Length: 407
Image (cartoon, one colour):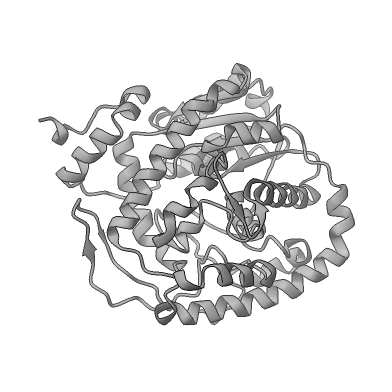
């Protein structure tokens, strides 16, 4: 997300390190200054964050990244101040459509695919873009100059080669993590060694205060402010919001938007784990401010899956039946147009055949040429571990246990 053409990334020379359970993670990108999830932060959030977490940072490894973020934060602060002066009255008066659509599901289950497909319905829906989420404090001012940033994101995502641009639908939690100063479960991608400390930010049910302020109030204020800013650019269309961590926040989201609707997608847990581990190795290293052990990364991936599943199962009954549709990724992949028609029907959205089906079919035809990552089989030790820990998930979602786990 960085607004500098001269930014380069150097491959780390460290050998791969393998956990006892199997996955190998290769420390890399210590000098990378791109693809950092907090590149849009301002000094108002950055300085307190560094002050609180000073002892958690591996300064000797990442001093260059910290320096670069500090320079960016200074620039973002100036732009943000100008934007606040020019746009704040408009932002404060913006009225968010009271019926957003939340796309739920664990990372790597197909949430991006659902998000992208829904974003094709431009008459009905609006969405947060990569540019808006990358620069949440200044995108209203910078919008007319967005073309200057065209070369600062890769054309495809690092973990799966899916198309990526500044206009692509993006996860709103990236913006909220920055605006709230790290009150988000995305912070382990910056400070993975302290990952357990950020777990309360999934549901906020047991979250303590941060910097003397209620965590849930900090997150909510940042969330609603960001949605107001997006509304300024999108008008009164319904927002389609996708951040996997929202899967654990059904109760909180319904407090904010009682008439919200939800699309939940799930996928074979074995495939999800394989893909999530691949993503961890290919993308997380761009943002770390300390170097985690392979075991810490693996525990984060496994624990996050359980946390999101358990919280969703506990709270999904709060959603009125006509406001929730559950999707099996395998069914969506097999027939995208038909499964999208089912989503529209269940949620009571009219006009699919007349306004959207053509765009969906065109996208589905294009996607048939896309080659998914080929993942190696799980190490038997890891396969047995998830069979034990995720047994209830396999059973409830109707997926078979890996055959290698059968004793």
